[in-house]
Amino acid sequence: MEKEKIITDKLLDKIKEKGIFSEYLPENFNLKSDKINIYGIGATYKDKIEPYSYYMSRLGKKGDRRMISIPELSTYVSLVNFLRDNRSILFDIIQLSGDDYNSFSRIANEEHEIVDDDGNYGQVIKSINFSISEEGDNQEEEKERSVYVENMLEKIKRTQGACGILHLDISEFYKSIYTHMLSVIKLGVDGAEKAYQENSQDADYKKYVAFDDRIRRLNSSRTNGILVGPYISRVVSEAILARVDTELREMDYNFVRYADDYEIAVYKEDELEDIKSKIVSVFARYDFRINNEKTKYEKYPFYMFKNYEKVLESLAGKDKVLNSVEIVELFNKFLNMEKNGEKGAIRYLLKTYKNEYHIEDEHKELYASYLLNVLCNDEKSLGLACKIIIYEYKEKRIELDHNFYKVILDKLEYEIKMKHDLEIVWLTYLLKYTDYLEHPMLTHIIDLIIESDCDLAIIIIMEECSNIIEDTQVEKCWNNCSSWILLYQIALRYPDKREEFFSRIGIGHNKNFYKNYLKIISHFTKMKLIGDFEATEC
Image (cartoon, rainbow, N blue to C red):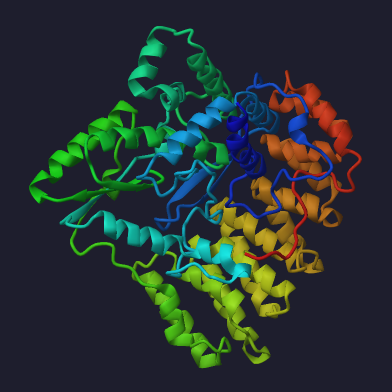
């Protein structure tokens, strides 16, 4: 039992730390606090509250959008506390994931230790060095940056002798997860089906039934689909796919997986359709279907890739000081690589350039221009570009002039018009943390954000710039919005609205949770759900 607690503590801490917010959001949105243990306040899963949902660009397909959700706070706290009291579920997940040799996205390694994921837009792009640095100060960073190459080299070794790779992707994976199937984590699909049909009273099965109940409540009791966004959803999905992987291994297939993307080694092309058919049948046992648009067969040679670090060194050398022509060549090269299918090239350059290259004063404007161009034209990198601009601005490595802000404001107006939620959030965040949001000429922009129905952007205005939002605007938001998170933020600021907050979103069983929470949080200097920003490394 003590071993189980030790092994599960880190995963439980990670679930708490990640909280209800997706990694796609600015770091302000968090549940961190050194003043209150939110998980120490009693909560129940019995309220049925609609999660707040927003939309972002899909990283792999330009113009396509995906829905990200934020579950109601007390229901999430109840789930976390349930897992704290039923650690055997976390233990099962850790063991299953750790034993999944085929997964490159598992949450635990072979020693059943919790692994760190990338944390930035879900892509392993800190990925470029062939060896881990021997210098202690940079060891962890270098380890993270080498993941992509290490994975690629491992793929090459595992697929020796193959004539091609079959790429399969599960269609609408998170939406396809049937919550009553969560017991497959413990029992396998046949055992789970039998237990469900027989209404088993087995203690382990009943524990997973209770787990199912709490996962469903995050999504307003829906049985079809789990929320995209909270880290707990990734934990659950990875465990279910580990079960799928077990069945595929038993069929003697050689494959690797990252999230729901499968790559199966093919040794005889005349067996291709048979392989595909059998894998589809395994997916069907879990109610999963393949995404035909993403299904492809790649003949040898496959797993071709560029070592971004070597490309960078060839263009920039090792002196770390670039002239204007070198800056242009460098950015053009990586922009072209991205354009030609090298996903993650731009994001790698932005991260590396910031940390490793010196920008002389005469080149600050040029560097800022490239950051702005990436922000405006690469929707996958907009959030990262905003974060880096803030960091560089705080470090005085770039200067932002009137023309720069004019482009940003025009971009924000466009994103508001298109109702691109995540882009609106990041651009609002950028304006705030480059000290521009309080400009007297920005009343028009503030009005547009208030009218945008992008509740997270409104929260940034309301809680981070309380001096520029008027009570009449807050009242308008209160009357027009329906999301639990914005109503919650307003209720924090206006105590007289708290009882109405309960009735508006349907809080019944968790009134005491919120009343106790509000009683404690009212002593805070700032009453908000989102934490303070510091100019941290990106």
